[in-house]
Structure formats: structure tokens, C-alpha cells
Image (tube, rainbow, N blue to C red; front, top):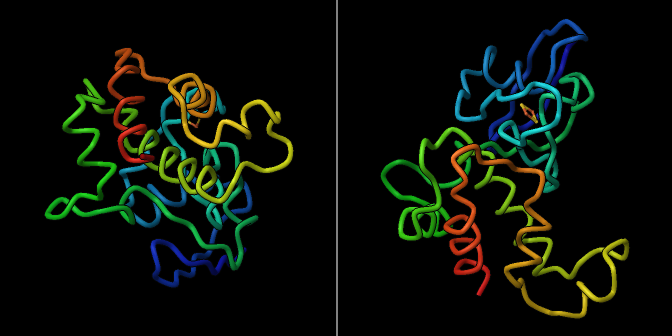
Amino acid sequence: MKLSFTVNGSPKTLDLDHRVTLLDALRDRLGLTGTKKGCDHGQCGACTVMVNGQRVNSCLSLAVMHDDDEITTIEGIGTPEKLARLQQDFVECDGFQCGYCTPGQIVSATAMIEEAKAGWPSYVSPSLADMGQLTDEEIAERMSGNLCRCSAYPGIRQAIAKEAE
Ligand code: FES
């Protein structure tokens, strides 16, 4: 099947078997290996990308479902020469150890901070939505889909809080 979508601002067209996941299309067909394959079944968040600004586990999503979508991967957030502010915050706060989960953490946190700035959607409990800022507890809850096997969580939450100030 033919898939036309936008990845990190560039239009892409791929001819894919309909069973190929978005994760495999990004990594194997487009060479965007910053998006990591951890569990490959929706448990770890290492494969998180943004689809039209929303966080998605790309291992759970078939690529052909994303015709006309806008995909943002870690390669679309900052560059090695010029890190995004959140990436710099991760460095300064020691928000990683081995680094394998970091692309997913950064993509997920970027989308989550945008959600927070826009106001939580109505399905979020009023007690959380009324806080008006990202508390440590709230960050932990909103980032619970991204696991870190090294347990760098305090630094990760600190970096996100710094960015969300
Ligand atoms: Fe997709 Fe773990 S690789 S959630």
C-alpha cells in the first residue's frame, strides 16, 4: 500500500506492506533510528512519536493508518549541534543513564508540556486540571507510559518541570 505523510516537516511517500508498524517504517524505511524499539508491544514508551501533536506508541500503530498525518520523531526535536531546551534540561538534570529510553521520554514530554500549556483535556480529573501547573506527582502520572530501566526518574521529572516553568 502507498503511504504519503509528513515526517519532521518533510513529505514522504512509502510503498509498504499493510502489516508494517509505524515504528518499523520510521526505522527501517526512513532510517530514523532515534525512535527506539524496546518491548515492541506498547509497554515501555521507547517508541513514542508525535502524530499530529499527540503521543503515540509507534510499535502499536500500523504505518498505513497514517496517510496525510504529521509525524514528529526525536530527529525533529533539536539537533546534535543545537539541542532543544528540554534536551538541554535533560543533560543538566541528569535525566538519563543508558539513554535508550531518552528519545521516547523527550518526545513524550514535549507533547505532554504542550498539552499542559493548552489546558488539560476534559477527561483529566478536575483536581489535576485545576492545579494549573505541572507538579512532580502530575509529571510522574502524565509520563507513566515511558519507562526507564535505569530509574533516572527524579532527573527526568526535574528536567520536565524546569522546561514547563
Ligand atoms: Fe513501543 Fe515499547 S517499543 S511501547
